[in-house]
Image 1 (tube, rainbow, N blue to C red):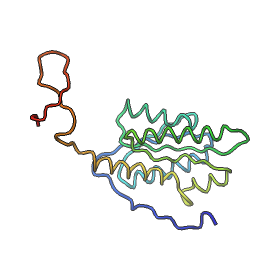
Image 2: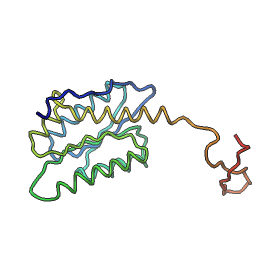
Image 3: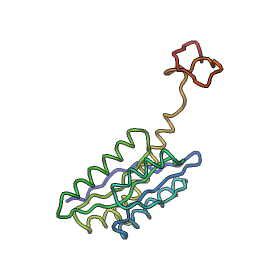
Image 4: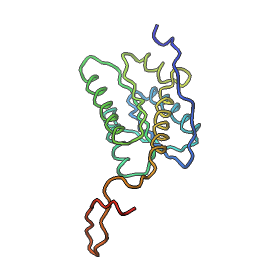
Length: 184
């Protein structure tokens, strides 16, 4: 029976320096969104991080808001929250696939994102997944974002001797990149 299995979750970590997380939620189903937010907030705070919350009109806008924040703000990680319940049209597939694809592409470009956008058949399924006392998918999405951030911080140390280095300053405003292995 689905839901009766025990799932492994990574141990909760902590942040070693100030960390700011942006929660982006599409509150189309407000009661479900509120549960997801409560779980995400509790997990972020348990890690010792801080957070901001913004709302967007729907699940399709969540990746766009995260991309904008990534370009224009100073967040370390992102939590995507919302819920899409299957209806009678193919709109469900479009919203599920495109919001997930957008978040995946942002993650592959280096953003630490936890995907907590529920894609379900019924409201009961959504509530079971959203409730903090049940599956707590909001908390799980926040934990995923923070675990990915920890990895990026672990692997993100500057490396010497890799790639192109700027040529010696010529006194001009334009600097041309050149491969100069003698420069460290």
